[in-house]
Length: 148
Image (cartoon, rainbow, N blue to C red):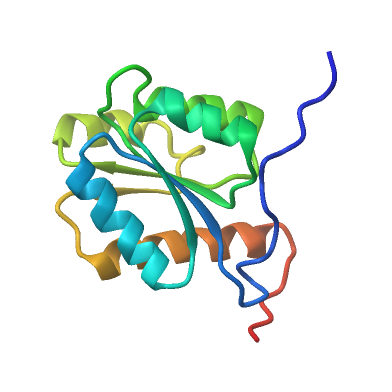
């Protein structure tokens, strides 16, 4: 079986260019809210409604980061994060949740998850969390920020 190429877009974020962000969220209002906020910051956003669709998108394209809800039909955000950590370990994963119990479940995955963002959140909070995770990833990999 041939090795799967990593769907990570690389250091475009650090070069002052947009990041490719995959958003998995089953609530269309939240999905739209997050996608518009990130696009307004200059990022390329692909939004899907569940974890199965997110895996399909990951297999079809390159992304810099995954932002996923925890509670979704089909494949939930934690199962999706575990799969991403196995198959694309260099890709940062941020989780979103409005449920305290789900936040606690994610707490046990600290090594795999960059942050859990609690709903409701502001546009600034979600955008800042995504951009901080991208910066941490790039600094950890030895890339140095060069803004244009």
